[in-house]
Image (cartoon, rainbow, N blue to C red; front, side, top):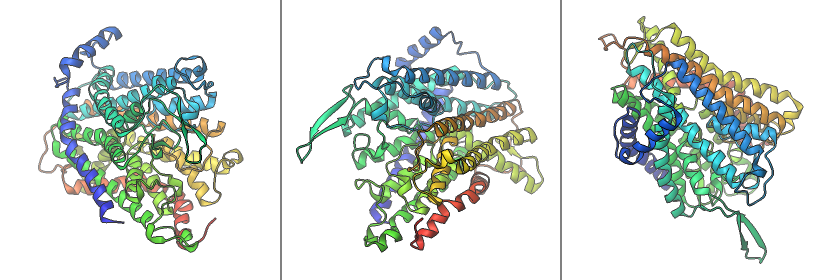
Length: 569
């Protein structure tokens, strides 16, 4: 650990902190239907979309209608993306002549990008045509992120309004998220990426002569545009197989910092948007503080673990003062790699700039644990906000039990109906993650796909399902996931992680919207102060993480102590 490393980390978080308020206020105006500086240009486009689609922007939907619209849109998205991948050989912009994507891989990939997971069981530069990358994957990078934002705004309205039966209009919210937020930011970030050296071309490849005189074919394509929305939408799906470790996706330390900033910006700012729309900015800052406490702690632990080095490698004669550089790019080092690993798993962004499976036992444990906390640090674009609001409701319910009062959150009484749906949502993750992991750990065809036997092999399986159900998409490495078993079960896990979670969340929103919003009284538990932040952090750790402790104890925790003892498996 070095001063320079901590300075890089501190400057990045400071830049995000500065951006939270202006971007949050802007999004609050967008989703409230107010005019913005982009309205003169984008307003006519928005109205044209509504006319062509037959949408009445003034007509709002109940929570059930809103949810059904979202599910129907997602189903069509899966079907259309699956068709593009299966028909790839016959579609244009395929200069490499790639064949159709196999059916099980096409199913996995279609589900992955529609659910904002972006798990990739393929090498992009050797599998996907330019058309599939642009019209398929990049389009759904926008739409899946916009869907998450729309759901978060609907939940926000449920807490801001009093005695209403509607939460807004899904089609309007998704259109505004795409048109006014994601698209303009993506254009700006794309141009910056191009200036930094990322390719943006329809050429298939370039041929270079190496120092030894050999010819090397280097894959090219529309990289910068996909990278921009990959990070802004917390998608994470890379153009190349090694993701942000590839020099064409992430060439310099500056591009690395921009990648991380882009990941965090919208997710963090949406929490401020929440505070603005419910009329309590302090509430937004309280949620941001809870997220920051856990995320910064995760960065610190990973950085410390990786800078200590690997005792096993030290016994082989490596200099421990250099720390553990296995699986890391020398242009980033431990600090930037630790920062990227923690942020990408505290979010639901599956992009990586290092190989997590090559981290130390403790360094690999933290990214897995951050996903298992529920993807709320600050989580995916939109999904992180409604995820932490579920934990906030659970926190005030626990506080109410402690003092014998009916719990309230932002003037809404939290009763048994909301708690039942909240617990249903929270239990989806451990049920699916641990269930599929247990089956795969015993099934010969699944065990055959692991790269390293023993505790590390269990970690590979556990991380894969953790990443899928958490809609993260990052991979631990080592697991050969492109098999019929993993393509199918990981696809099912992604669907459950996204939709089996969000349906009860929307049911909570519908219930809260119908309740009277009452002013705070002398006996109301304040939810915008340090006491609530501490309680919320505790609830996230207890309900979000400790359910996985037995499984972690058999995998990365065993590996950590074995590494300290100089043992390998």
